Image (cartoon, rainbow, N blue to C red; front, side, top):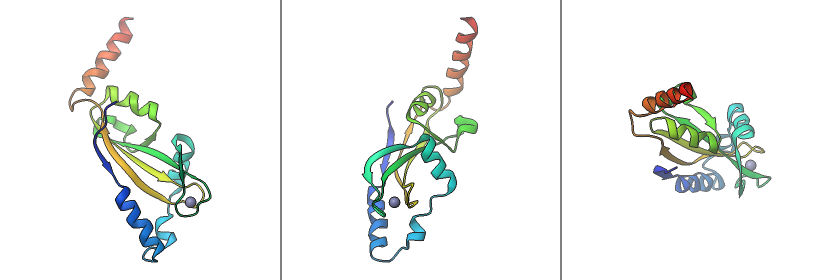
Length: 137
Ligand SMILES: [Zn+2]
């Protein structure tokens, strides 16, 4: 699966953490993961090697969210790596937002975004062809 238009948000993340240390931001402002994100972390998250930079109590979990018109109702949902790979084989290009979250203190931040999927306009054809194949098997 080839990732396109990869954007790394490490610099912004460092900025937020620095502002937190210097008192420009409060814990409440940055540790605001909602129930939905925390639940998604439990179901679809991947535990990383990185310890939470805020509370240092546990390792961060990364959750990937998918966004794209061709995804239909799946757009805006959290997905595991295997699911994203499957979606990328049968849908027009879509955006993935990788968010890190601490399930202990609720710190969360966008880590990276990228695009995967088919050339715009081909997803529907590919899915129709796959349905036809299944029907004739
Ligand atoms: Zn934490």
